[in-house]
Length: 158
Image 1 (cartoon, helix red, strand yellow):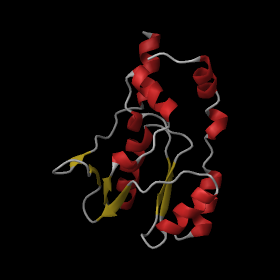
Image 2 (cartoon, rainbow, N blue to C red; image 1 turned 180 degrees about the horizontal axis):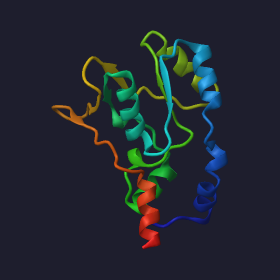
Image 3 (cartoon, rainbow, N blue to C red; image 1 turned 90 degrees about the vertical axis):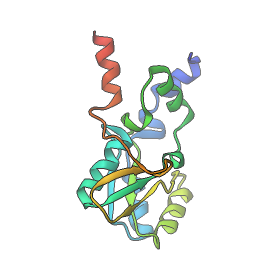
Protein backbone atom coordinates (compact mmCIF):
# COMPACT_ATOMS: atom_id res chain seq x y z
CA UNK A 1 0.00 0.00 0.00
CA UNK A 2 1.48 3.30 -1.12
CA UNK A 3 0.41 6.80 -0.09
CA UNK A 4 0.12 9.84 -2.31
CA UNK A 5 1.64 13.16 -1.27
CA UNK A 6 -1.89 14.45 -0.66
CA UNK A 7 -2.73 11.50 1.61
CA UNK A 8 0.43 12.04 3.64
CA UNK A 9 -0.44 15.73 4.09
CA UNK A 10 -4.01 14.80 5.06
CA UNK A 11 -2.77 12.27 7.62
CA UNK A 12 -0.30 14.78 9.05
CA UNK A 13 -3.24 17.15 9.58
CA UNK A 14 -5.50 14.61 11.39
CA UNK A 15 -4.68 16.34 14.69
CA UNK A 16 -6.57 19.40 13.43
CA UNK A 17 -8.93 17.97 10.81
CA UNK A 18 -11.02 16.16 11.78
CA UNK A 19 -9.30 16.97 15.10
CA UNK A 20 -9.10 15.19 18.43
CA UNK A 21 -11.40 17.27 20.63
CA UNK A 22 -14.71 15.72 21.66
CA UNK A 23 -15.91 18.79 23.57
CA UNK A 24 -18.38 19.98 20.92
CA UNK A 25 -19.67 16.42 20.41
CA UNK A 26 -20.34 16.05 24.14
CA UNK A 27 -22.01 19.46 24.41
CA UNK A 28 -24.31 18.77 21.46
CA UNK A 29 -25.23 15.34 22.83
CA UNK A 30 -26.21 16.50 26.32
CA UNK A 31 -28.22 19.40 24.91
CA UNK A 32 -30.11 17.11 22.52
CA UNK A 33 -31.23 14.34 24.85
CA UNK A 34 -30.61 12.16 27.86
CA UNK A 35 -27.06 10.81 28.09
CA UNK A 36 -26.18 8.08 30.59
CA UNK A 37 -22.43 7.97 29.90
CA UNK A 38 -19.75 9.19 27.53
CA UNK A 39 -16.24 7.91 26.91
CA UNK A 40 -13.56 9.33 24.65
CA UNK A 41 -11.97 6.74 22.39
CA UNK A 42 -8.26 7.22 22.90
CA UNK A 43 -5.54 4.77 23.87
CA UNK A 44 -6.49 1.22 22.97
CA UNK A 45 -9.09 2.39 20.50
CA UNK A 46 -12.74 1.52 20.29
CA UNK A 47 -12.29 -2.03 21.60
CA UNK A 48 -10.70 -0.81 24.84
CA UNK A 49 -13.25 2.00 25.23
CA UNK A 50 -16.15 -0.43 24.84
CA UNK A 51 -14.63 -2.77 27.44
CA UNK A 52 -14.01 0.12 29.85
CA UNK A 53 -17.59 1.33 29.45
CA UNK A 54 -18.94 -2.20 29.98
CA UNK A 55 -16.85 -2.68 33.12
CA UNK A 56 -17.78 0.76 34.47
CA UNK A 57 -21.52 0.21 34.12
CA UNK A 58 -21.54 -3.49 34.98
CA UNK A 59 -23.46 -4.57 31.87
CA UNK A 60 -22.76 -6.44 28.66
CA UNK A 61 -22.47 -4.59 25.36
CA UNK A 62 -23.49 -6.07 22.03
CA UNK A 63 -21.30 -4.38 19.42
CA UNK A 64 -21.86 -4.17 15.65
CA UNK A 65 -18.43 -3.53 14.12
CA UNK A 66 -19.90 -3.26 10.64
CA UNK A 67 -21.78 -0.14 11.81
CA UNK A 68 -18.54 1.72 12.59
CA UNK A 69 -17.36 4.23 10.01
CA UNK A 70 -13.61 4.05 9.55
CA UNK A 71 -12.39 6.96 7.43
CA UNK A 72 -10.82 5.64 4.21
CA UNK A 73 -7.37 7.10 4.87
CA UNK A 74 -7.35 5.75 8.44
CA UNK A 75 -8.33 2.34 7.09
CA UNK A 76 -5.57 2.53 4.49
CA UNK A 77 -3.03 3.36 7.24
CA UNK A 78 -4.23 0.38 9.29
CA UNK A 79 -3.90 -1.93 6.30
CA UNK A 80 -0.43 -0.57 5.48
CA UNK A 81 0.86 -1.14 9.00
CA UNK A 82 -1.12 -4.32 9.68
CA UNK A 83 -2.98 -2.97 12.69
CA UNK A 84 -6.51 -3.56 13.96
CA UNK A 85 -8.46 -0.30 13.54
CA UNK A 86 -10.60 -1.17 16.58
CA UNK A 87 -7.49 -1.42 18.80
CA UNK A 88 -5.69 1.72 17.60
CA UNK A 89 -5.91 5.14 19.19
CA UNK A 90 -9.02 6.92 17.97
CA UNK A 91 -8.79 10.36 19.51
CA UNK A 92 -11.62 12.57 18.38
CA UNK A 93 -14.21 9.81 18.63
CA UNK A 94 -16.75 9.74 21.46
CA UNK A 95 -18.85 6.84 22.72
CA UNK A 96 -22.24 7.99 23.94
CA UNK A 97 -24.56 5.75 25.95
CA UNK A 98 -28.12 6.99 25.69
CA UNK A 99 -31.57 5.48 26.10
CA UNK A 100 -33.24 4.41 22.85
CA UNK A 101 -35.76 7.23 23.29
CA UNK A 102 -33.00 9.87 23.11
CA UNK A 103 -30.62 8.24 20.63
CA UNK A 104 -32.34 9.49 17.44
CA UNK A 105 -32.49 13.08 18.75
CA UNK A 106 -28.83 12.99 19.77
CA UNK A 107 -27.79 11.44 16.48
CA UNK A 108 -29.71 14.05 14.46
CA UNK A 109 -28.28 16.93 16.50
CA UNK A 110 -24.73 15.64 15.95
CA UNK A 111 -25.30 15.09 12.24
CA UNK A 112 -26.80 18.62 11.97
CA UNK A 113 -23.49 19.93 13.37
CA UNK A 114 -21.51 17.92 10.81
CA UNK A 115 -20.44 15.32 13.37
CA UNK A 116 -20.90 11.77 12.06
CA UNK A 117 -22.86 9.54 14.43
CA UNK A 118 -23.59 5.82 14.22
CA UNK A 119 -25.54 3.40 16.39
CA UNK A 120 -22.91 0.71 17.00
CA UNK A 121 -24.41 -1.35 19.78
CA UNK A 122 -26.53 -1.71 22.84
CA UNK A 123 -26.27 -2.51 26.52
CA UNK A 124 -27.93 -5.61 27.94
CA UNK A 125 -28.20 -7.28 31.29
CA UNK A 126 -25.31 -9.60 31.97
CA UNK A 127 -21.75 -9.68 33.19
CA UNK A 128 -19.50 -6.96 31.78
CA UNK A 129 -18.32 -8.09 28.35
CA UNK A 130 -18.29 -6.87 24.76
CA UNK A 131 -19.95 -9.24 22.32
CA UNK A 132 -19.65 -9.12 18.54
CA UNK A 133 -23.15 -9.40 17.12
CA UNK A 134 -22.16 -10.33 13.58
CA UNK A 135 -21.10 -13.80 14.67
CA UNK A 136 -23.36 -16.71 15.44
CA UNK A 137 -23.24 -17.36 18.29
CA UNK A 138 -21.92 -13.96 19.41
CA UNK A 139 -18.20 -13.99 20.25
CA UNK A 140 -16.28 -11.84 22.71
CA UNK A 141 -14.42 -8.87 21.32
CA UNK A 142 -10.89 -9.30 22.65
CA UNK A 143 -9.69 -6.64 25.07
CA UNK A 144 -6.46 -5.29 23.54
CA UNK A 145 -3.32 -5.72 25.64
CA UNK A 146 -2.01 -2.42 24.30
CA UNK A 147 -2.70 0.14 21.65
CA UNK A 148 -1.86 -1.11 18.15
CA UNK A 149 0.06 2.10 17.42
CA UNK A 150 2.52 1.19 20.20
CA UNK A 151 3.38 -2.00 18.33
CA UNK A 152 4.43 0.07 15.31
CA UNK A 153 6.78 2.19 17.40
CA UNK A 154 8.23 -0.94 19.05
CA UNK A 155 8.93 -2.37 15.61
CA UNK A 156 10.59 0.85 14.44
CA UNK A 157 12.73 1.02 17.60
CA UNK A 158 13.92 -2.59 17.24
